[in-house]
Length: 155
Image 1 (cartoon, rainbow, N blue to C red):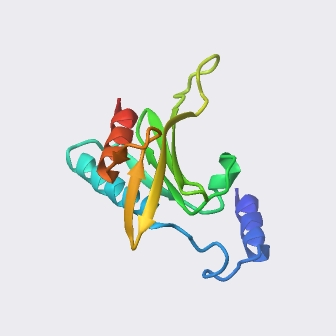
Image 2: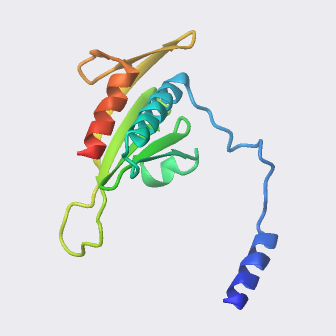
Image 3: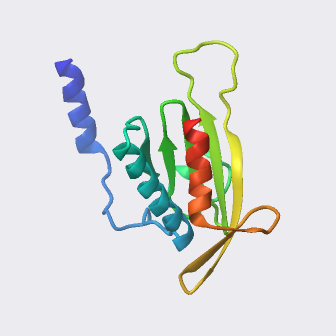
């Protein structure tokens, strides 16, 4: 174990460490930030009511395109529960994709371990005000979108 730790330290010393404020800076719009704020409030409220298995994590800008085949327009985030993940990601063409995945809890063999698209949200921005639309062009509110994702994640 000591040799492993020593090798990790050497690796750490040799890794290129770019300045923090460089290209990886987020290019988020108010759309994804608004959804994140609602998700944060929802997760905190659920935790205060005893649902301790729920977590919220921001996704770095460069991580989204690795797993999803579109150009990222900024950071995304994920809501994690004991049973499911709900990923929120913004594409560069003013869309927010929300994917879900059921966690495989030590189960081997056949099963649906693929992601499924839960929602596809279009949005417009005007002077910092964001309007969200579903696929039928019906206007949605940010809290409705997050509530649907939280409901899916917990059930």
